[in-house]
Length: 620
Image (tube, rainbow, N blue to C red; front, side):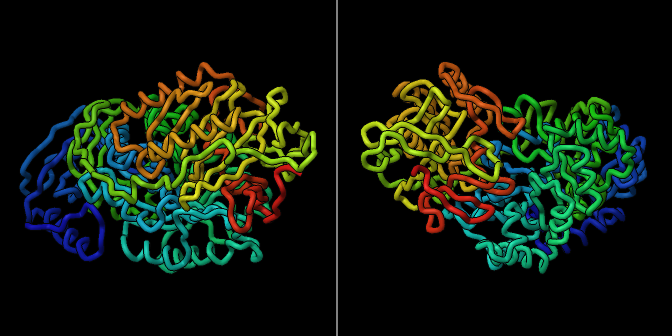
């Protein structure tokens, strides 16, 4: 029978596919293949069933039951009597952009680790090119990639009212995304909590418009409650309609948020502490939990794994393997209202299987997706579509002039020998900024390496003008002279950030990113020492993982010859050495207060308190 192509999901084709699957299940039409396994995990009841057969038609499952019991014809049979079948693993919350691979290469990387579907938290690419966001996330699937991507348009587009750039989403855009494609699961993490609760906030109407559109289309409103500990705030967050949080760090915080009805998405960095603490308190019902990756680079995925790494951490923390598997299969599928398609080895779902040769260690022998084997051990053997990404994806760094040292100079008042300066440190979540007196030389306010003070700047990469905001930061960046580090990945607006020991080095690093259309640029002692290319969106590369990793390793090697400033800060994930996490220190969502953004009408110098809207000079 000539069936619709179900790479993408739409209701009309879905009806025809399911009419066909029902007849295959009854044995009235032939099936394409049957996979016989030694054991199969029913994630709905958390029970193993011995000697089972999974009958497939096209990309879907038509029938599941005891081996030999299916009454219909089967074109091909596959025997895996020594393997244990569990559903394909899903990501309830992940930024694929943080792998720095385009979706087709991300799929080839993570499918051998069992990851067959992902809810893409898309405010990263949304902020670079909002109008083409949905097209970007559906392109690889439409071209034949076996990994399912369920996009959630970004609520943080822009992240705050004090930022602007490649995307602006409100009611109309969110309604359009949800109506256009059933694979759009809801609204990406609502991050700007002050804009949700405060009617005076300039983003209030935009955010509530997106929430309204999501409710109208019965989508899921994902939350982001970073730093939220007070019971009143948690209650208000849940009352406002946020369905989840992935920002909890301790068992106590998880318990407080769980009690108020939030679906808890546990990230790897503190999963052992959270699960261990909850088990010690007697937690028995894990149906309101999922494991999520959030952000993981290509290099780290190659070393650690993907969703499977999260599951192993949960098992090591004390969860039974069957429960840990539920946390990446049926639980996230239920939460995201995707159970007709993913989350279980059951009729109607995509034929996605993870075949284990050992359950306790979660050792993966094979992965199947869309009814075909796509991995053997760690080797990907599935289709890898070749995509020529168009100009709207590859021409996103729009700076129509050469940056010069003067763009990063901070001018002093005439006749002054010192100036007071506003200082931030990475992950500075205090109510007030730091203040220092800094020297003036030649009419310009200077860094102070002796006190770990360097210069940090944000460069607008959207308007063509190369507008730059700049200020002084504490405890980060290079102490080595004439050295700078620049990157086009600056969560979540993704303007270019640059930190350096000289203005000329900062200009040189940013100009290098103009040429490559994004990535990393390291200038060491006046010379360009390393480049990493993120030519798609300034966030990703359309190359195999090994090529990207090789460039990253070259960057790390070049960085080893530099003396980096360091001071501890609020974040336990802020480490000495190469300041890679500066990409996250540019966040502007809660719990940040004072931040630096590209110059905007509401913050002409770029220095603004995003919780209150207050602005302040960087020097005075």
